[in-house]
Amino acid sequence: MSSLNIIPLFSAARANAGLDFLTSLTKVLDSNWYVLGEQVNLFESEFSDYVGVNHCISVANGSDALEIALRGLGVRRGHRVVTVANAGFYSSTAIHAVGAESVYIDIDSTTLTLDTKALRTVIDSKPSAIIVTHLYGQLANIEDIVAIASAASIPVLEDCAQAHGARRNGKLGGSFGTIACFSFYPTKNLGALGDGGAIVTSDDALAKRVRQLRQYGWSKKYEVAIPGGRNSRLDEIQAAILRVKLPHLDRWNEQRRSIAKRYNAAFSGLDMQLPSSIGEDFVAHLYVVRVEDRVRFSEGLKEKLISTDIHYPIADHKQPAYNVKTGFSLEETELACNRVISLPCFPGLTDEEVEHVINTVTAYFSRGQ
Image (cartoon, rainbow, N blue to C red; front, top):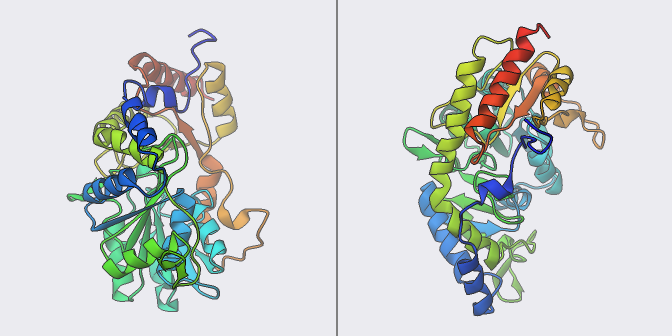
C-alpha cells in the first residue's frame, strides 16, 4: 500500500459514487421552493413507509430530533430521563436542553447498549422517558425494554441515528418504541449532503405536537399554540438527496454487514472483543472492537495506513462540562469507553482494503503486541 492509499474510516465520495443527484437538485432549483415543499413531503411519506410507522416529521438534524421528541413527550425541567453514558453525549445534550436530568444506567457487556437488568433497577422511580440508543448499528434489546417500560407506562424514545434499516423479526428500528429519532449526517447509513434529521411515530396526537414544535409551536401561521417550539426544518435539497439514496439503503447495509462478517471470521481467535451480531439487527454503521491497549493498536494500524477512531472515549457522566453523580455502577460503560476502537467498514471499501485490514490486525496480534 502506497502513501496515496490510506484506508479511510469513511468516504463520502465512495458512498455517493454513481448516484444521480443533479436531476433532483435541478428539480428543486427550478421549483424555487426550498423549505417544507414537495420533496420534504414525499421523503417524509417514503421514510415513514420504509420504517413501518404512520408519521415522519423531518427536522434540521439528529440532535434537534432528540430534543423535539422529548418536548413532544412532555419532558421538561425537573423530569428524569433514563439513558446510557457511552453513546457520545447526544442523548444527554437533548436531556439538558429541555432542562431534565439524565439518569445513567449501565450497558450490556455484549451489545454495548442499554442493559435491561439495569433498567429494572430504576423503573420504579418512574422516570419520564427512556432513551434507547441503537449503538454502532446494533439494535438494543428493544422488545424487552419496551415491555418493561409499557408495564410502567413510561414512553420509549429510540435513538436510531446509527441504525437506519436495522431489523428484528420483520420490524425496523424506530417502529418499536413510542417515538424514534434519526440523523442524516453525511456519514450515516442514510446520509444527506449536510445536516438533517427526522422523528417518526405511529401516535397521531404525538406526531401533530412534534410537527408543531419543529416550526415555532404554530397551530397555523404566526399563531403559537404550544410552548417550546423552535425552527428546525429539513430543507428541500436535502430531502431530494435522501429520496435518491433511500432505495439503496438495504443494499448498502448488506455491504456493510458483508465486511463485518469477513472481519468477525478473521478476528474470531484474536485477543479482542468483536461486534455481538452480524445479522439483520446489525447494520454495521461502525465496526467497533474492544482491545486492551487501543493506543498501541491504533498506532500499529496507522503505520500500515489504516484509519481508526474512537466512538466514544469519554463517558457522558465524566464530561468536564458537567459534574454528574450517577448513583449507579457504570462499570461496563467505563470499561467500554476505555477499550472501544472503530475500524473501516463502509460501502465502497474494496476487497483489497478489507484484506489489508484483516492481515494487519492479524499480524499485530501474532507479534504478541
